[in-house]
Length: 310
Image 1 (cartoon, helix red, strand yellow):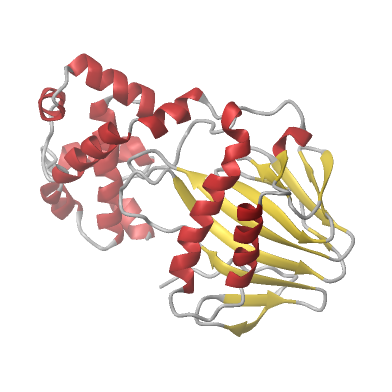
Image 2 (cartoon, rainbow, N blue to C red):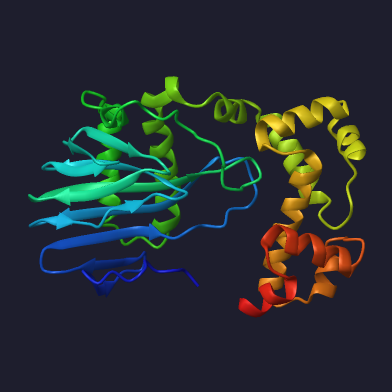
């Protein structure tokens, strides 16, 4: 079952489309193409769209200041002026311009005049589909450095216009196509920031073959123990090179990366109702005591407690 946007006291659900919901009050309307965290198959996608929303402000709109904990967002004004503050600095963004809000930023919407804008939220991922724990864009010196213009870029202007039309569509697969569309827009709007993308994230993007091979190796062996020496042999590289690549791209050793992936799968199995004994056998842990110990070390609670709370 798909998750709906969290309740917002200022808005109420007015009607439901096949693709998502519209929330409105007497002043403002939001049309969500999607607002949920997808659970992608483990592939090297690197960008996970989390929200694609058209927001029409017919009077004024002021949201409480909030910190982007683990996601980033592009905001693209379509009509009027979009006003906000980022980390206490006020910004005014106009049509054919955009602004990037990064994880860790404190953001406040403060639109005092009618306007319309698109919001595209996203999370960076590593090549195992896990949230990226490093920075993507080096922190700018000023809020203005987060802004960009695509005026005169006819292709981008066309894409943004098409994005607006997506909110009006009632096609049966609009949510799926909107997800891909949002992912494409994020990559396109990251282009102005290319010179400031962190070296570590660039390295992640440039090692596709290694990423896909080790991804496949991990997935094919989740049911058993996989020694680092065997990983290196299967990857056809020395243990030293394997460890160096994993350190640079994952921020951890190959053994730790593999164990974390197994524990993530274990958590999903427990959530689905499987017992610790079943998970131990299915994922090839040495014994149930070993599984319980490493699970609690990783998640902070026992496997039994985790299963009970789901």
